Image (spheres, rainbow, N blue to C red):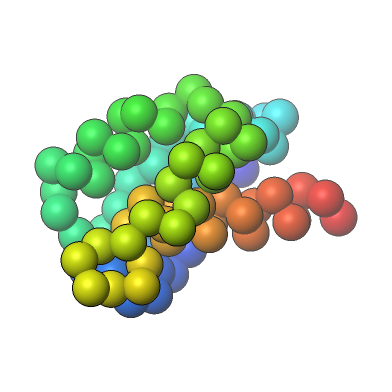
Length: 87
């Protein structure tokens, strides 16, 4: 399953997430825009992890004076995926 999330309030513009068939495990994450090295690092760290492991850790992280960050936006995207899976 593939998901695309348009970010809000960050340098990255979009997050593409591929989930395993179980709908809970992250297969891959890629960001469009943003800090290339940092976002590749985040993507590598979350690969193979379950949404329930990743979301609480990334939720609420801020970038400088912004009210959000790329990790926080990834948490928001994963939250949307969780909601879709509940239906």
